[in-house]
Length: 334
Length: 202
Image 1 (cartoon, rainbow over the protein chains, first blue to last red):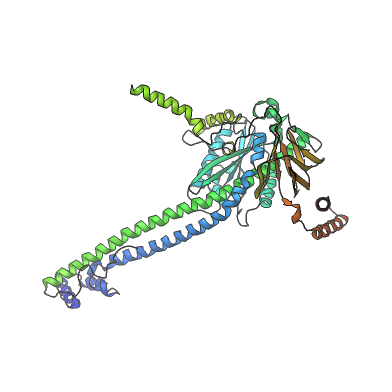
Image 2 (tube, each protein chain N blue to C red):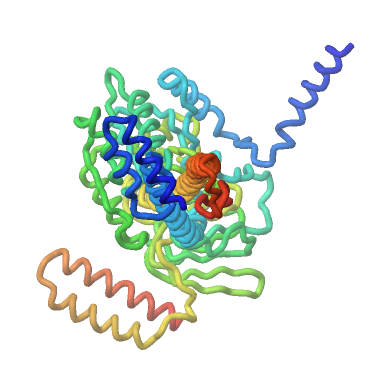
């Protein structure tokens, strides 16, 4: 019946339009429902393709969110256990980010993989501001970068200031041995008076606080202790073992650096997984909304076409067995 | 009338706020340095919040009491766990590089470097023994002791046979070592294993 109507339609079009072939070709779509839709067949194909790809994206981002959640669970326990490690050093030496030294080294910790929200950009912004803060007429600051993402951003404008860059940190399971070797490498290759580690501290799954921890070299510690103020009562401490006080202070500073780095790296890894979780979650939600909108568009196109066909068939006295709201349109949303 | 009421409310709430906040950082030393940093930050990057510092994440330590407290508060932390945190004990003996050092409440503030050896924690009649690899022991004036070690195991988890085997192996390596680096590594192995065996026996 519908075919008879179409043939009549085609003849009618053949009379009026110069290009009847287009109409016929457009109606020669693969599926049955598109034959009744005429010119509008192409747009439903487009919409359906879009819907398929958006649905795939939704599935992928949902899966990524699950993976990030499971990784977060594993690493969060370890990060929280490592929090007790740097506290004794801060209790002894305090944390004075406003200390005035000649050579500052900014250690920026970031992730290697992307799709983790804004945490890497935040770290880089903070690092750049610290660089501006600690650069002056007689002081200088350089970067040591951990992770691909910060390297990509900082290499654009601060290429001359980058001393060392380390990537693929999380290839093996993060452990203290690896981080202490890394800390040793950094200390060997870099001259420093103060090391400022910039990382994202993991507060909760939705909140990551940019943090900076300052570690002073033994000479600066001695200088500050003599000057009084925060470290003034460091001299009250007896030194056991070793020949000289400076040797012990050197070991202390190196140990402090490796402990702080370990905690910083773990916290940043936690923050990365948490940020990825929320980024993928909002991505799935957006994909779902887009899918809803596309479904409505698709339904309205199909219904319009059906309505048109229905009206035409009714006018020509050939009532169809199906109505406008047929099974061709997608009823409801997922 | 309402202006007075709001003024009173504001002053009361401002006074009550520090007490109401459980995590307020009222450290003796922290605010001054942090404030200088915050000010310098605002000049450089006025639109960004300054980053936090570790001090704001720490529980503040109590000040030095006037009389010697009866118990020593011990924090024993390792990279993967905090073995003891805020535990009140009577005495701790740590293996400093100069020998076994006992820490009692009221000990002078000390920074001690540790060598591989046995650490004992005495609480009443209860003695816990750990073998620590190396690290630092910090004793503060307020009878807080922080022991940070890289590795620590309770002594009852050490296998004596493996200790003997390791000792023999490293002694042999030391004898056959050629370069300084190899000698140093073998020497460290010998030291650790002999400390282990004496910890097991003593």
